[in-house]
Length: 335
Ligand SMILES: Cc1ncc(COP(=O)(O)O)c(C=O)c1O
Image 1 (cartoon, rainbow, N blue to C red):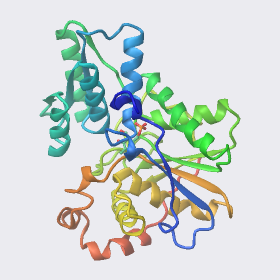
Image 2: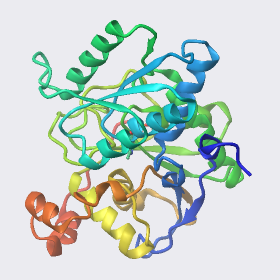
Image 3: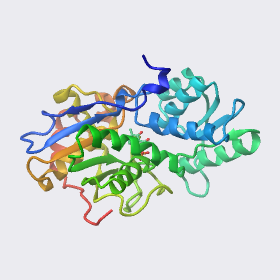
Image 4: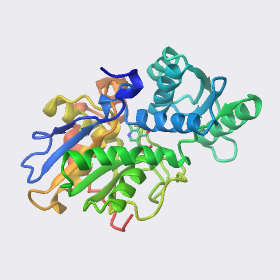
């Protein structure tokens, strides 16, 4: 018997993917972060940040938690705050989906919407941070987890990597890891470094994200990618970085659903297509883990909606051919 919902965060299962990649010459395994009770890998970070705040007395019974997030981190924090009886203000922007706002409110979070991008940068991200700062100034006894800078976000993922390493008895050749705050990447990479695990880490980022360089561009699939390089980023965390497009995410998600009966979120589809792009570099019989960060239900009106896909990317029946024709977007330098 588990003691409360937060105690079942983590220890997510590994599932062998035997159908997603045709004629696959290596073992491909998915770490199913959708099995966290809030539906994503961010449950781990949210819990770690709140628990650390409680342990250091930065958070007490009357504290209001304030964070900027339109997605999984907000939901993870809303879940943890609901369990601990803490007030939570989640600052979102108009890109937040109706479903995510409903989920946040259902957990009892107060949702604050910024309506205009920051005048200086043109970014909603900066506008959300500005609003967080205003709220922190205005609310006595408030606490900002600050997922982009707080090292405890990364420390939460030492455990993620530990679970994988233990389950595979240290025999893991490649880990594919999606990036946004870089919490997962940094936590897993530092665990590998500090524990002598012989695993090559492949970062998977969005085309149009600036984390690993490259020009900033509009992205439609939320979750992975960042418009500003996060303070948690460090050079050298990954062997290489593969950038995936929104179209890759859509094709990969639909492939996971059709071939593996896994209904996963956008970055998971991108991860599968990153493996597809990189597969010729993987020696036969290697073992590869892809971290599938979240559930697909949050993307029913976008990635899994033929109407939405047709509006943004054209005929659904031609998507696979389009994605396959695209030149691999594998970056070459060391990351
Ligand atoms: C769906 C999804 N994939 C990947 C990531 C990237 O994780 P991280 O913030 O640890 O870099 C996130 C982060 O919110 C996410 O929501």
